[in-house]
Length: 229
Image (cartoon, rainbow, N blue to C red):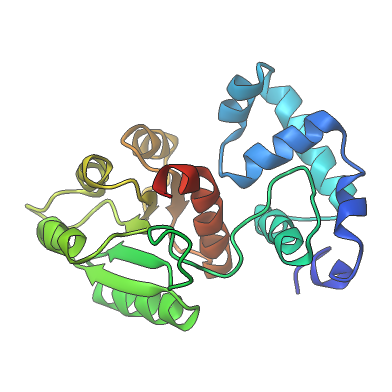
């Protein structure tokens, strides 16, 4: 059970966001798009420590314990007609490529581990996504030619002699305006920074929590939706 989320499902959402100051609402909106503390600080012209203070206060005032809780809470108003001042999320998982179509969101998974392939495809499909899976980058052009992609989940290490996830992210940036999420076992700070510098919108370290992955997908779509529509 998610602390502070399901137990408060019927609470007036607008009243909860009224507990935040205008600056905290700004920070909240940027947090929900997946930006890190340094990026938020640069965007608002403030310090990282100030952002951290706002972040802690946002979680305390809203009664939340994680970013997953925050993204889900911000998705609720879009189905209830409530304006939080922090930006709502997409209702369900509609594709962003079809001019308002309610078709399933299209996810491209590039993962060379057969077991992880099966797990990711099964879980994403069960949650309503249309999934295309590749073991490496060799079929990337064909996959993009077959239809648009909304979000790509890229492993970084794809086997000897194969393009890595960094290279694929750069190729995707040239081909389509999809969201890019790195899903990798490489969790060092330098790896995360390189992934973001190479064009990733978010970076998740394995093992991946699928509730968190879904929240990150929605966050990425919030950021790129104006570009894709």
